[in-house]
Length: 467
Image (cartoon, rainbow, N blue to C red; front, side, top):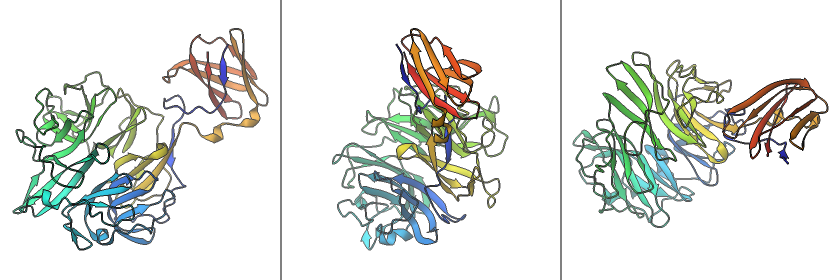
């Protein structure tokens, strides 16, 4: 006997049309100005969103360079970080209900704090964290580019990288590790064997090792104590710019940026490596002509069993600045935000990053004033639903039942135009034209089958049959 579940099915495969549109419930009002720059976005567990950058105003409200936004898009006026509104804050990461911020500041609210500080949930300074002594006195300024927090409270450790200004010369910073209170972890010594003058990004793995993307040396891996992991094959190309990386559940490493092969004059914006650093040639990446205009992926983000790619590119599979791939690198054409455009910046529009929020929502920021047909400036929250609730019309009185080895689909008020069956991976098994109020078929044993029924009035009903 079959167990029949005629209900809206929420699954992550490409079986159904993936609706990814601007979330109108996130009401920004006038939002940001076209001249605003968002450097980073992070979210608290209560769904509030922190924006960092050069913003000045949000919906007509002065916010300076940092703003805490409620889940409905309004400003949280209870958040007050004092002088940090006027500071250059480049990145931040949440630590429970607190916040670690990084930038070029040397004090906050009259209290010395060099380049890193921890704030309480209301924006006040957390005096238990002070990283000032972790920076050498010869450092004139620093731009923190990335912060990562690893471990469980209260044994968490903080990793960061950035650019140091010493005697008027900008130096790249190897990875630095701090203890929970901001003091320098002296057990971590970055072994400067390679030229790591320009670190683009890094990822701390579950085993404590760290993948490091360098503009000069490509991708390499260091051990938990900071020494070079020589068991990892250093990845590099003729021209290798690693903008972003993510590690898939199977341990494989996906890199996004600019990877050029001079022999073929082609370049790929994506490369996947095996766990040991060797190139995974089974990944179905794509190449573009290196003589074209700006064609670069700035960020990749895991989203359920998909990969979101964002940046400044055109006609990657016909999509501009935002596309979604399956884990094998194949293109998932069912995700479409309608592209981003800008009347103010013209062709110089882009998406800096897509951040996955709670409840399968996505925040994008960059340089644009329209997403699809929605007018939003430089910041937008996208709602993700596998199915549109309007597609399900309860008045159709669709009934599904089984008798012996046969499954019957009956529609009372509308004829069934056609029906499609898929396996759980989203692969199409069968598609049949029906044009009747009844359809019957035999489905395989020991299986879970997904169905999509198209009715004559244009509505769609989806669900699953468990054998």
